[in-house]
Amino acid sequence: MRALVTGASSGIGRDMARELDRRKIDLVLVARDEEKLKELKNSLKGKVQIISMDLSKEENCKKLHELAKDIDILINNAGFGTFGDFNKTELEKEISLINTNITAVHILTKLYLKDMMEKNKRTYIKRCFNCRIYARTSYVCILFFKGICSKIIRRNKRRTKKRKIKCKNKCALPRTSRYKF
Image (cartoon, rainbow, N blue to C red; front, side, top):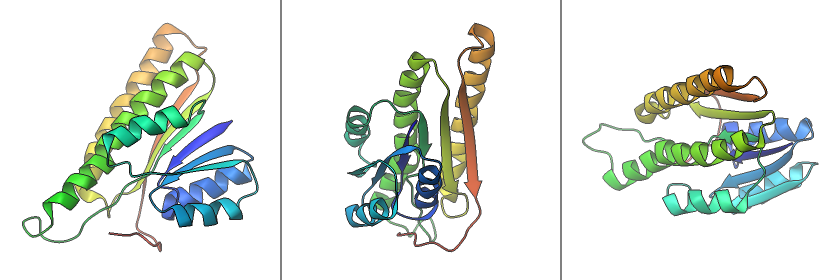
């Protein structure tokens, strides 16, 4: 099996990468911070590919899909949050936040789901994020992901029982981590 983990340089993404490595799953790790990705890769035992990329840019999401094929597990974890009164926070930062936390999740889920359904073997799609930190976008992600998951489940039941696609939406509570804002 091969897993793609976005936001793998710290926090939940890093922890998911470590757990998947422990389970002997090949990894494609994606984040903006190449140095942290290299450190993580050196701490893991299995086969690891790292890709340093900013997923707030739509073209990078599509490029990632071209670079990382044959994915069985998709963990959409890239994301960040902002703090402050809505009328005082930076617009450009919030646009980047929306592009990372919502648009990138949509693009990657769509592209990899198509591939996974064509392969017709057991696959997993997971969205992990910190609900409190990403409060402005977390509800959109939760509703989007619930909709995708329910469609997949209904389609699997209606068309064939051979497809084995599993969806999970994990919303973590705040914990000690090195989130960058």
